[in-house]
Image (cartoon, rainbow, N blue to C red; front, side):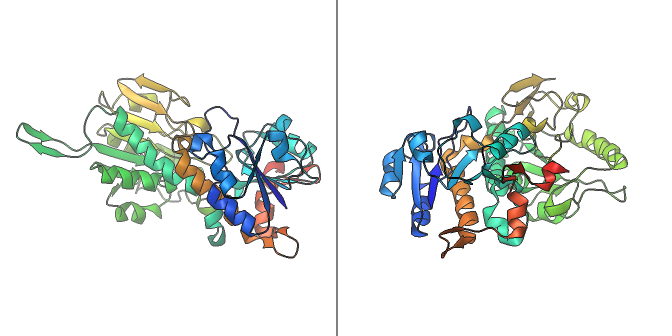
Length: 373
């Protein structure tokens, strides 16, 4: 069993899909591991560190030669793949909805493409969930980005010259990233409030010492999606939420938006008119900018000044902390493959529940129901 770890070629991608820690563990399972030269450089991992862990180091062609499993952070360009074993697996974050043509190309290449972001939200797969592990650190970093752009202090400060009031931070969307954003903003001393379409998050918000901001007057909200994700809201709820947010957001200094719906554009949470009600110098970090944005006018990778408000269109926040995010991502991959490792076969054998969920292509065809429906 030969495992190949590729160097990421996507612009701005600094993470790597394996660390010396996981390399040793894969070798302990009986696998041979090859790492493309320079793969870990941007994550502060030298080729020598991989070699010391037992991995072979070589060019992309040498790394892929005879590979049974190919590991990556983002889906590699199909044109850059050759020489791997017949029916090889490709396990990475493949962005199946956004990169459908690339998925089709993987099928034509005979690869069995496994989309790690399609990992089901079930108890036994928690340690394999790249979305959660990367979102956790991204939520933390988003608050630090806001603090850096904000022209005032976060905590209340009492000095001989007078008192500095604490910043007011509002987190919209209380998933993994949102919860970490709440905790981080609280640690920095801000007064924090948060909202979500899922009523179950209210207790989580309170447990972190933040104030929940919820629409209470609308029944039958379609907020509880499958697998713990949020789903589309009813028109009545959208109207009620817009009114509530408009009155609340005008009083906030920092806003972090995190709302995503799998397979759909990010829901619009803040309009241009609502932006105009915020005081000059306020900061918004739109963590959903790459998926269309929660904030009107935001753009991925851009920082804009709109109505005196700094709007940061976050892009691949996880890549800003490559050492830690790589460590977590690589453990997700190892936990996934090792959980199904068949000692007699000398390779992982997926079961139906998780295998069917993450498998995009097999036998030269696209087979995932989420892409065929």
